[in-house]
Length: 229
Image 1: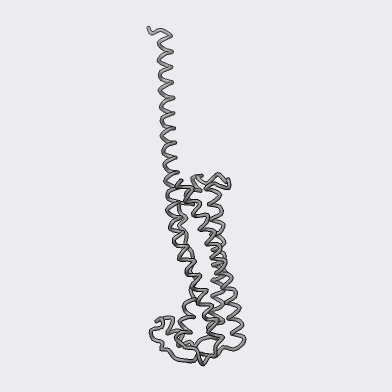
Image 2: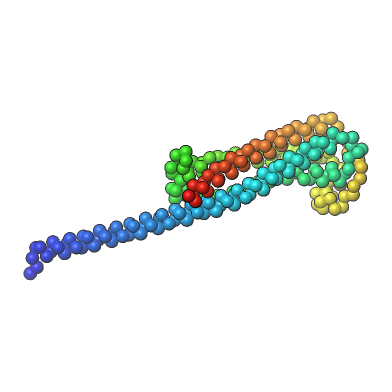
């Protein structure tokens, strides 16, 4: 017969073994969770770097469109008989494209689901992410407004500015089948006013997009620095 002391010793050893097993499992889970958090943060950093590269292209496209709009504004101020058709249509087609920003936000969404972005201190990853996404939302809003502006422009203004046959040639076969020839379709006063109203709105939207892009670039870089430090 075992003594009571032996039973107590066995019970104590079993209890310690169970406790150590639970502790080891908890420790392994904690290591695994920390590893997932680090992997997610690294993924956020990689995605942000892609976004920042795209933002450079995005702002360059906005600046190019603004230059072409300014050029069109200068062209329509000239005597229509002294405007080169090819130059006119080339300029027109160049700024008739809305470039939309497509973020690589899969890792950020995953981080939110995992609870990685919880702290809202002013120097925290969650704060920088909140500001970054705020300006991203604003960019999308401005893009929608600009798209509506272009739709109205294409439906109501372009038909009054262009010869349908020439414009279809330029749009399908950019500038290849169109020879340089002086003289364009004269624009009446109402069309010029509508065109300049469109240009004023487009300039405002493109400026707003660039301001938002600069803010995204600022907070995106702060997130990357926070992750890599």
